Image 1 (tube, rainbow, N blue to C red):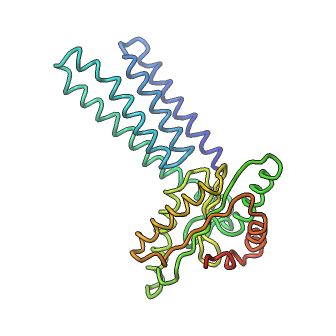
Image 2 (cartoon, rainbow, N blue to C red; image 1 turned 180 degrees about the horizontal axis):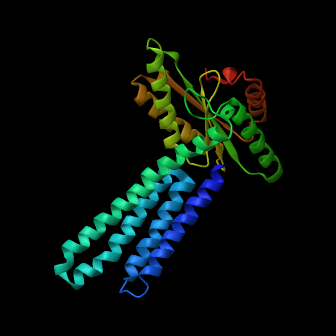
Image 3 (cartoon, helix red, strand yellow; image 1 turned 90 degrees about the horizontal axis):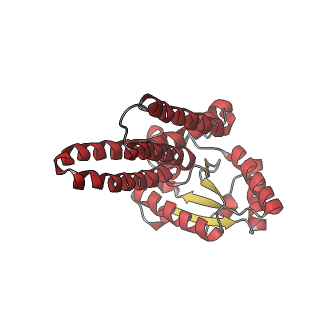
Length: 268
């Protein structure tokens, strides 16, 4: 099953559960505020399964703010209801947070799990991310869309110093790589594609992203990795390649297809 189908199934089930709630409470004194709260819940769910943890987190914050604002008139109209309203607010905020953050994280993981179930040769076994084979195909597709429709995209290459894992037992090295992969996966959007390449580098393909925006992502990822491994600036280097960098993209595509990866693209 491809992730797009999984996303549709989750959204259909979420919408069905909300509609069922409305059906069961149609005859009751259901407040308009609670109807809006349910709609907001679906919005958070959509953000989580479509954009991942970051999108779900932002949607949860927005939904919480809207719900709090809607609840204020209840307190001002009847101060004796303050404690009940606070309990309702807390319950909604927790629910939004769980769906947005936890749901978004699970959605990010499910994307790679489903890809692995569909084809084990698509996943790098050490990191759980995509491998060269998948990224060669995704890069070729992105270049074709840019050539045909002018759809922008960028690539981020992350070079991790060998010292970050050197001197550790294989099990510890695997844990470090898994941790770095988890950080990268959680910091990017769900529409972005992340991979660990055959030479140990990480690659992120960012659809609908100009080179300037990709460099911001590259710097953020590099800083996060440096903090994760507890080393200086030399522990992680990152660079962005834009859709217009034809020579670099062609070379990268050839290396990915041949399994040689991006050794020549390592920043000096």
